Image 1 (cartoon, rainbow over the protein chains, first blue to last red):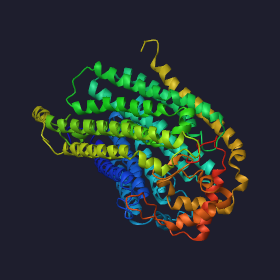
Image 2: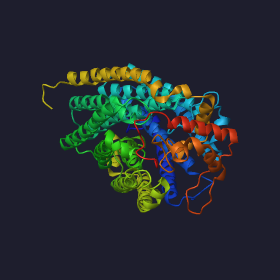
Image 3: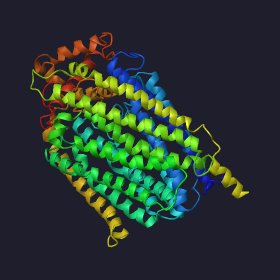
Image 4: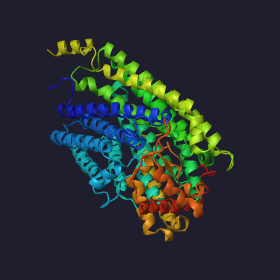
Length: 472
Length: 146
């Protein structure tokens, strides 16, 4: 029994969070390998070729965020619904199934050539592999669907039995959308133009659509908890923000349809709607800072407040500002597929999704561990150092990649045929920025280490002792 | 926010707005799929092209290269490699030689793995890249270097 939890079944979130963090560390480690391979081309070749390291890096990202989202749902849905989780046992079963399948998949990537993995897992029967971010073997994809269905059933039944709050409903629509859009990963036509068109239904409609609902719901939940602000106020904001996210994001898919085959009108649609996509992120920043300014209580978990504000602000920078930077068709014509894309991708994913998962972990982990409302001050100091090291490192990684991208466009894309440098010549010219990125990646890694240390220092907090004394 | 803007109105924006744009997106998708055959020239999509795409996928080429600008940014764009490396006249010959020469083993240079494909498989892959280069993509990339 944990006196720190309102519902004992919330505890199933803990393994999800811990495993998510382990995968996060793996993701960053492989990111560092990739960074070095940009400048030391034969680093770890042929043991870990770039494509394998990259697949591990991006797949770990997706999977750990999914673990994070599930953990978040298992933690907050019982409390929001005011009822125990429908089946904690099912949640634990699904945890192990997903964890084992995930680890096996990653080992598969690392230990056998991808073509052998494809053969081994029957890709020829239902080819779904080898497309960016959807590299998982078909069996793993089927596993993901099964886990997602079980998860949705569990969360859905809990909400049905309990209170249907706005946070619950938006989280649920986000999660259902996540599962439904993933089904398009099974559609892989022989026609590349069609393939790419619907590939974006998973990729874009996830990260610039339904995931934003999940993010908004989690952020709203944490803000209510740490500020004590009236739920009514938060809920109105939440509706407006996620409404704007969908209104701009759905047709905003068009900014991916410029150069892969669909008709030219997408250049207009994509430009107009994706130019509006920063709005919900801007609103989210206003919302978060507003709410924290008007807070009705001083929550002892300062780190969680920092993460929440950081999420809102960095998501706006990464997804909003850096997205807008190259989203208009005339700009994108030159920047598409350059390091500018990589720069935007890094800050957007970190700001929006990495940070929201770390926010809910920061808020809930002290309770899940039975420590109290917050970790000791000492642990929080480490956690906040982790926050600043990781966040600043990521901002500088983004700046260096942006510089690399601008130079790449200048040398390789802008000149006429015959004057433009080739891809590899350009890469040599911009190596300095890759070195700077790699060094900053080292700082990010130190940040991850510092953040991890925060879980192991000063476990006993003053707050807990007071709470325990009061209870006895 | 002013009191006149109620939660009910916010909720209607969320559900109503998204429903409207989902429908609009589906309508646009329907129109796009009707237009695509003229733009992707699917009448030229042979068995070799289809097999080439499978080879492309099963060797995770997208993990280093971009294709029509999407993928990894570690190796050159291949959506237009057919034109960059000789077109009808010499692309296939170049491509056979290139695939067999990997890895180049130049110290410090980025290395492309040896995928041990048969001549036929390399030819199919070349067919796939050739077909891809002819999709109408609004004149992207800006120049041959991709």
